[in-house]
Picture (spheres, one colour):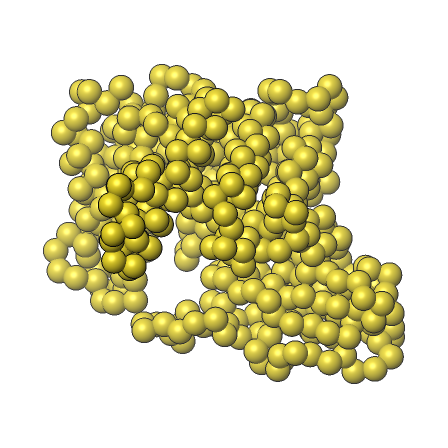
Length: 453
């Protein structure tokens, strides 16, 4: 953890640093509104911090005299992202987590370690972290990560205008990045941390796979695997409970821990008059703790049996689940940076393997324009052209994945694999979200469990 003593760098500020946002805008969530529980939703995303200290520490980190510009350039559900420009033209990105980002300390510690692992060990293009603190007990008053600015242009600004050939190059790069993620198998399921930040429960990060000589020893020296930072293991009173958060030795241990976690929480804290997704809970089973507990018991009776015998499909894999045009940067037609590694963790491959959001398409596959294309109305031509382009993109991704990453191809195509992933997900949020998806999925599973494998 890199921390800075209070007011250490304020003396380096020679003038008041201009800001492109009011201080209130920097702290508040300004990206959207809510129709329900808005006050609570905004509070979960409000983060006050010492603006001048963040600017001063960033300037010191870059070896500059002063920060001359600071703007909020991104804001998601869990973080605020700022671009800081120095007097000498140097630029850095600062990322500050919202209160709802995940477990304090662990979320930032794991994000930084994961970024460094991906960058230095797997050679994936990831911005270099320049300074960080996993404690809010610092002069900034908040956890933070200061990193290099991602090289290139955000893909969301160029994807729609790109020709199919240029898109195919991006798709090839995505497959190559996934190949690097698949090149290592971990010995445990959990979140990555630096060895120097290890705490009780962490174990050395043992890896195997297609890696350069000496990498296995280097990883074991620098990194550990510890409890998961997945938010559902820490939400509400769960953060104070003695729960099994990993690391786990087996996929069955992980999927079963979800039901044990929810059973413990529902038994202690669930109330019939509590709120579901911002609205009072409905009648019937949704507000009955016993009905939820009964379904979780059924889940426990089947979930481990649903895991495939092929252990490669559920091997511990580090996986970025959010490959979309907002998290990809491109330069000279190739991927130059992948961002947003918060809460990325080592989980069973089968539960993570999906076609990237950027490429995924659920419509009818059509690889050629119809013969009567030119006679169609303009609006219909646009629709068909988009359908063909999306179909070709999926085909290109699937074809290359099958050749380069056959294990991933098997995982994506595994019969009932998506159902298993949904079952695990629904078991973890039936009370906080809704009971119906869990109940219906269990019914589906019981209907064809004899033919599951």
